[in-house]
Image 1 (cartoon, rainbow, N blue to C red):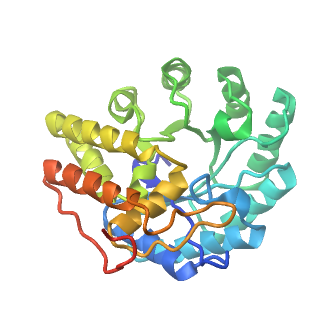
Image 2 (image 1 turned 120 degrees about the vertical axis):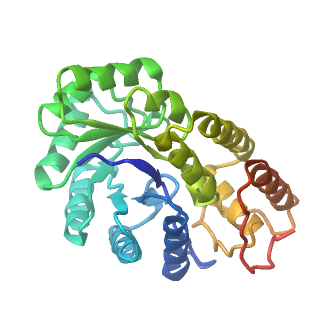
Length: 313
C-alpha cells in the first residue's frame, strides 16, 4: 500500500498540570483532517513521544483511530521509536491492535549504537507485526544516520519504507532510484515539506509536514495543485510556505505550533514540561498572526479562526 499526500506530525496537547488533554488533542486531529490533511504521524518529535508513557501513547493511537473514523481514507502511522527494542516492539504490537495503517520508528536514541544493534532493533519491530514498518531517519534526535547500505539490509528483511527528515538529495536519490530500477516495493515519505516539489518528480508522493499543525489549508492547497499538475500555483504555494516556515523556526517546532494555533485564536492547551510555552503577553503571538494573515491573503486562502481570547492579538 502506497501512501499519498500530506500527513502531519501532530502535536499532543496537554493541560497545565501535565496530563494529556484528550479532548483538545482530538479536536486538533479532526480540525486538520477536516482541512484536507491526509493522515496523522502520531507521537513523534512534535507529539512529544519520548515524554509520554506507553499507555499514553497507545491511548493517543486509539484517539486518532476514533477521530479518523469520521473521514474517508485517512492514514494513521504511529511513531513507536523508543530508547530500547522491547519498548518499541511493545508499542508496535499495541498500535497494530488499534488498527493503524503502518508504524514508524527512529533508531534507538541517546546512546551511540553500532550498525548491528540498529539492524537488530528494526528486525525485532518488523518481526513483531504484520503491518508496514517505516524506518525514520532523524539523526538530529537519534544520533544515528541511516545509510544506503542499512536501507538495503532492512529491505531484505521486510522494511516497507523510509521516513526521512534530513532530505539529502544524494542519499534519497540513491534509495529512490534503486527501489525503482530494481522494482522494490519500498516507499519514501518526506519527513518535512522542504523539497516537496523537486522530490515529487523523483517519485516521492507523500510528506509529513509540521506546517499542517497550524496551517493545514496551505499544505492541502500545495498537494492539490501538485497532483493536478498546476505548476505555477504549486510553485507559488510552495514558496509562500517555505517563507513562513523559515520565520516559524525561531524556537522548537512543537512550541511554535502551539503559538501559531493561539495566534489563530484556537485554544491549543500546553506542551508537557520541561517544554515551556511563552506567556500570552509575548508579542511573538501577534507577529505570528501577522505572518499567517499576510501569507493566506497572498494565496487567496481564507484564514479561519477560533474564539479563544488568550494570545489573540
